[in-house]
Image (tube, rainbow over all chains, first blue to last red; front, side):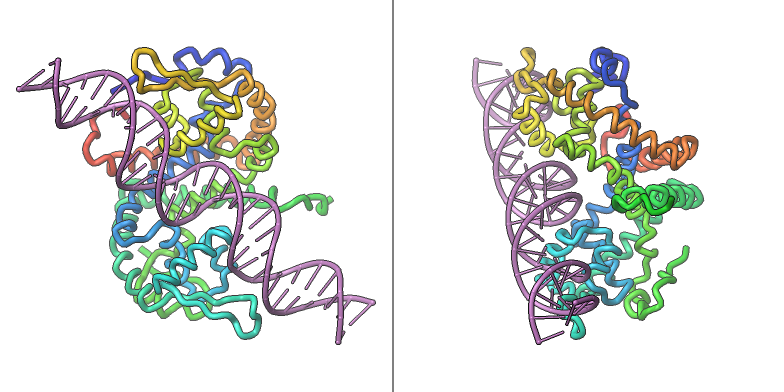
Length: 172
Length: 172
DNA sequence: CGGAGATACTTAACATGTTAAGTGAATGCG
DNA sequence: CGCATTCACTTAACATGTTAAGTATCTCCG
């Protein structure tokens, strides 16, 4: 293989001179994307064995830990957008992995919970999942991992206020 | 390792006891996902103003820095899967932002390059993009940012060899 | 009480992620 | 030379990301 170094050593001059930008492959979004992909690549095959996608697994895990939740709350917990969640819940319900019932107090809300079958499925996947996580932790180092997560949390936090909406003018 | 959710004052006991797992919201994949989303949320609106998606922008940036590339090489650089890239290139070509020509030496390969219009578009977006990146850097701290990227790179590296499953000795 | 507005989803439409299969062009080897 | 294999993509099919619009329900204020 080894087609070419393909880095900045070739004729990258032309356009790069007109539009100077940080080396693309070292941008923060790319770093985060690649790191996450590297991690998920470890999990996906095992999940797939059980007919689960990454997002479906997220939902089941979230439900297992909070017992029952409204859709919006679940979306926040599993970090999914409403429309995605809506579709996934429809599918998971069809597979009898979750259950829903509309709340009596507020007909708009529906309470979602994991089913007995869902629990069984989780029980069959969780050990492998934990094993993979342990392997990653060992490879990278537990302390370093904690450090990384801390930094990621701080990054998230320090960017959280910017985008909320256009109401940034109140703190004058 | 802490095998307890240890949060949520409600009845999270039932299932969590049967299937003990790390607190879901603190898993590495979730941390990475949320951090990346927090970052991209800063960029997406501006890109959208110019009719570009995140991936299209990645491709244009990659092309701008390497001048011309085969599809496979571009996929590696922009960190996209072949099928996604195939579709996006079709669209970008229709918008005259890129150009393609099949290589003479090997009819299978096609060389992709950014067009004059593509360069113009990049020039109109790059300043805002850089400004946003600068803002992020300032908020988070340049040193900390570099540290974070270093760790992300290490994480990627230490997981890289696991999944390849056969060709580990080639390049990297 | 009643209607405007807010809320909690759901649908729709388009773009990408992900895996598998397809297509045409090069290669290797008998 | 001939043909199976490999290679470089492309299509296809399904699932999710993302934004906008739709629908039913609830809340609040007059």
